[in-house]
Image (tube, rainbow, N blue to C red; front, side):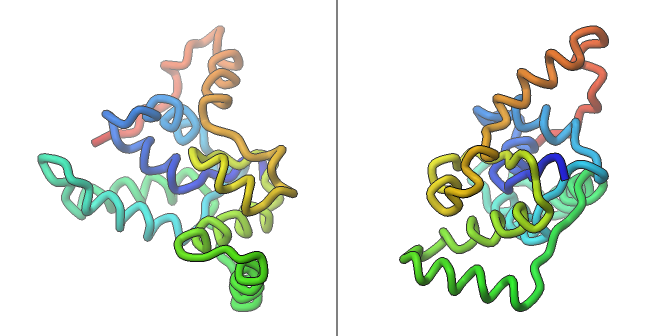
Length: 166
């Protein structure tokens, strides 16, 4: 798999006023099932975050489901089996990782499972700490936005499908 897209990138891609919106949108717009993946768990994270954002107007659950459908259409969804799930938790416990860091560890396990060449996240420090063996592959979407801009310089980045942002 060429790329794995973290929840932080998915959420910022759908929030038009998010500081990292454009770079995240560039990554998600270029995503295709044959080369892009995300964790199935990220769908629940996107739903959980987007439905409680302190914004006006509130984002209705139906709109968030449309965002999630967009992710499903663009990315291969990765799941862990029972053994992989437990092994990830056991490893995190042995290394002293606590609290919500387990969710990042599970996402990184999904990225490793599909042998992602690049892992896009806005949580560089946490991801690199949790998976130092994957550190060279962990990047922000800002790096991708520059790459995609060069790749599409002849036809223009505007040829990438725009995803409705809230």
